[in-house]
Every structure is written in C-alpha cells, then in structure tokens.
Length: 244
Image (tube, rainbow, N blue to C red; front, side):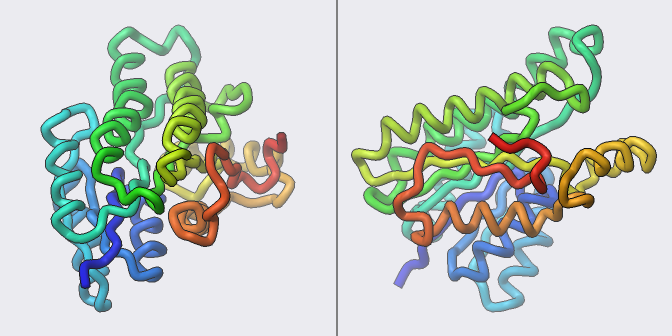
C-alpha cells in the first residue's frame, strides 16, 4: 500500500528539518526538498534509517521546472496528501537597506515561491483530505523593526494567500493553513547576537525563544486529520509575543 506523502520545502532549515521528523513519525512518506541537496540527503537518510520513507530532491522555489519535478517526485512516492512550505529567506534592516534586487529576491522566494508550489501541487493533492501548511511569521501580523519591509510584506502576503486558497479549496476538501513563528532558536536568530537576543526575549511573556520542534508540532497538527475542521487559519507560535 502506497504511503500518504507530504512535500516539505526548505527542508534543510531548522523548522523544515523538524517538520520532516514530526511528519515521518506520524507515518507519512516525505519528499525532503531544498536548494541544499546534500543536506536533504542527510535528512532523508536519517528518516529511512529509522524505518521511515523519504526521498531527497533539489528544489528552487523560484524555478517552475524545479517545482514541477519536486511535485512529480511526491506523486511517485505515494498518495500526495500535503505540502509544507518552509522555504524562505530573511532580510534585516529598514527601507533604506532594501534595494530593488533585495525586494525582488525576498518576495520571490517567500511569497511567489509559496504561491508557485501551491499552484503546482493543488491539481495532484488528494481531495478530500489534502492539506497545505504555509510558514508565515509573527512579523507578517504586526509591525516589526527586527526584519525589513521586504520580509514583513512577503510574510503578510503568505497569510493573505493562505486565507484566499482556503476559501477556494474548501469545497474540494483541501485545507490550507499557516503558522506564524516568533523568535525561534534558529541560525537566523543566532546571527542577531547575544545582546539583541536578550532584548527580544525580554518582550516574550514565556521568557525564552521557541524551538523548531515546537513550530514543527503545530505544522504536523495542521497537516494531519487531527485538524480536520481547521482551514484558513494562521496559528501563532510565539510564546505570547503577539496575541490577536
């Protein structure tokens, strides 16, 4: 019997890797997709060594042919049940720091790339029962001086895209949701330096950074039947930093 399969983009990053692990533990076959193919292979080997099913593919979310190949690999692996869009880049600074090239790169990966993967996947998703989970950001829901206007706008766009697709695809039984991480213990946050991190942690009611596993657990909840009546939602994983 073919497994239910999920395509995870940005799978070489902390949240992507953790999501692969959470979904594999729930019995899904995973297509581990990222620009960093060697890192994807390492993640896939870890899953298969534990008895899971995984395939590594190189994926550039700004390239249509690359996206089509990743979708095809997911279809080949089993029943295409879901997509988790973790691929993304961050940019720091104010408007003066955002050149046209930076704006285009950030929005092309974070927003247009998410849209393009969804567009390619939807015709092949199991219906009913298919799921899409997009990774947005708390920065996309509230003003942020931590990240740049390009990043904030791209993540706000992901939230809007999520709501729109949820409305369109609900009659087919396909659910679309998003998670909005706050300050998570990742390489990007580490790059801010200890003093800046301390300042940010002071503003978190829980008094600490979140973990990639905590984000991944929420992603896995949204990607499974445990959330069968949830669609069009953006769930914040931010320790209470922003409450709406």
